[in-house]
Each structure stands twice: as structure tokens, then as C-alpha cells.
Image (cartoon, rainbow, N blue to C red; front, side, top):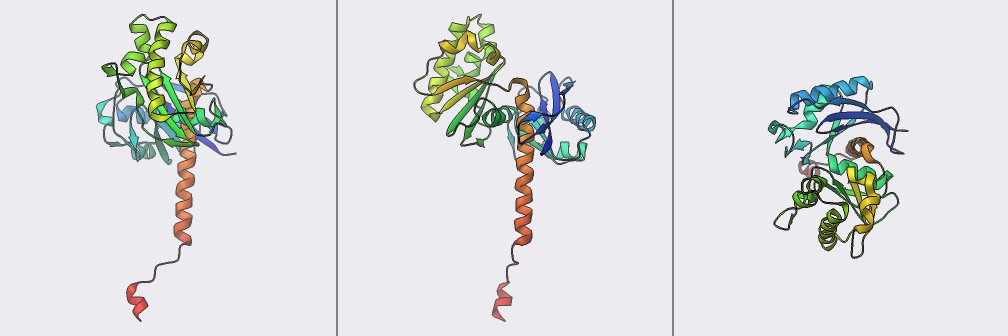
Length: 271
């Protein structure tokens, strides 16, 4: 059994738990600490370090972030302090915890977990996981491999970003009933069908708990659609999965490097 700490940074709370990455199960009850006001990097890093200390972590840690993450750097900051933009967050958290930390976009983490252990388990081909809340998060998985940072909530639709028109916040703002909202979501999903031809849509976020109110109203051309299963645990599980896979990849590279024969210099060959 491989146990990795997963930490999910949210707008109101930062929560974590150790995860059995072979099964996707949390091994202890989640521990949650309120997100510091403003979510400045220094304040958030202290919370992550506190969570690592709480669980007595002595191995790699996976951490989600609500923005674009590329090679450990945070490149956007929609609902957090702007000092995150361009920050080497991997290094920040690694120094704070004393452990190797691997960062992943929050929607990507949830999608990776849902595709492996949730509603997408055993599904081959293209799986598109969408989380509907204050915005629309997205994760694109092809044969179990994540294509990161898709940010499909920002697609332009009906003269505005899709998440400004079809998110759960838009439903509440425009006082839509579930059938009216489902019509908007159907338009959005049909557009994504044309772009990606997914075998399966998985719908997450708070609306997944109320699938009986909207699922039958969604109209698609050919793709299947199901509500998410992992709910609030998905980010934690996905973060732990990413940390495990990243560590395994680095170990393989290290072994390959040590095993590779040293290249003979051109000068040596001439002798």
C-alpha cells in the first residue's frame, strides 16, 4: 500500500488527508483549516505545512491549486492573491514542509481521481470531467492520461465565457429552474462534443448531488453523461495520485541515469 498526503486548496478551506493511491480511499478523516483571508502564498504555505505536521507526513505531498499550474509554477490567480502568478509554488511548499511537493490544478486533480476511482473507472477513450460551481472547471483524460490545464469554462459561448452563462452561479444569479439551466448546459456540452467527441461526460461540483433534478433534461448527440461519485474527496485523492506518479517518474529517470553507460568522448575514440 502506498500512502500519500493529498491537500486541496479551496476558496474557503484547505483540507487534507492521507490517501491509499492504489484504491483512492482516504485512510484518515479529512482535516480542514480555513483558507487565510486573501490567500497570500506565505499564509497558504503555512497552512499546508500545518496539515503536513498534523498527519506526520514523511513522504511526498500532492497539493491542488485553483489556477493554471505548469511545471510547478502557478500561472494564474482568479480567486487568490496575485502574488501567485509566476510563483514556483512547488519550491515554496517543499521548503515549508520539508517534503517533496507536487502541485496540480484543482479541476485536473478532481478529474484524475474521478476517472480512475469514481464514475469513470474502467472507461477507455476520452473522458471529460466538468465541475459546475462558481465557475466551470474541466479535466480532459484520454485512456487514463490527463491533458492538463484545459480551462474549458473559459470557452466563448453566447457572447460570453461559458462559465458566466452555464455555471451553477449563473443558474442562481439568473433565477433559473433546473430545466432552464439544463438547456444552457446542453448547449455547452454539445459544443464540447463537437470539439472532443468524449466517450463520457462526468458532471461534478455541488450540482452532482442533485442529479435527479437535471440529468434527464440534458440533451447530447452521442456522448454518455453521469454525475460524479467522489464529491468532496476528489481533489485530495487526485493530488495524492499526482504526487505518487510524479515521484515514480523521477525515480525511474534516476535509475535510468545511473544505469546508462557513460558516453565515450570523441577524443577517447580517436586513441
